[in-house]
Image (cartoon, rainbow, N blue to C red; front, top):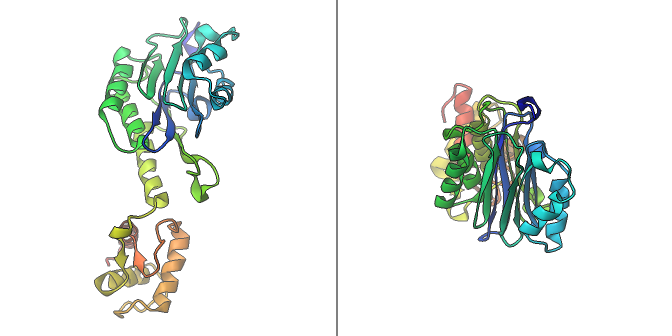
Length: 297
């Protein structure tokens, strides 16, 4: 099979039992690879389908796991009647965190996988086995949030040589019950870099923005809108063109209305949860925005 017929891809699927999150992270020399590779459902598991990917493996695998079928059995059921199996690569982590993977014998070198407790790393057309090995080692040695660990594993794979053909796209999908904006679906994080010369670095940047916009603030870190904090906020809002008295010391109704308008404009409603207070990360953003316009506050 010609190299031109298969995209080079490496990915990781994983489960975090501490918070019941399932995720997939992927990088590929292929446009919008995450739209093909990454599938996950809270309470069921996660699937990565790649190397002449059979996209039906994604929804079919999640449906099987939702019925309680374990990762190894899912791999067997998905591949048993597929004529394209020799060219496929597939990885699964189930609802209990059991992992399993499959690499067809006709996948282009280097191709392979490594499974461990709660995760599987896999890739094809890679610089060598060290790509998958370093991804797995990085994931096993890391702690913290699942999303950060998944992106870190991609970075480790890229440092080890990544795809033989280079980089193009990357994606991160993490699900948990009621994890979405508004809590109506399980899609906690769904970020894609569809075409970029450094897609993993860009994915990391987008993940930090996701935390900034959508993570709830630490109640103990909130700053009362009074004194020096209130002055900074008012001065920044004035510098950005909002109708406030930049000389006043009190955070009055005019200032409150201006701040509410700015928050709505910048989509920080998830961060502004306590009346009369401001999140320090939001204040930093406000100050940077004012500075970008040539002002200080």
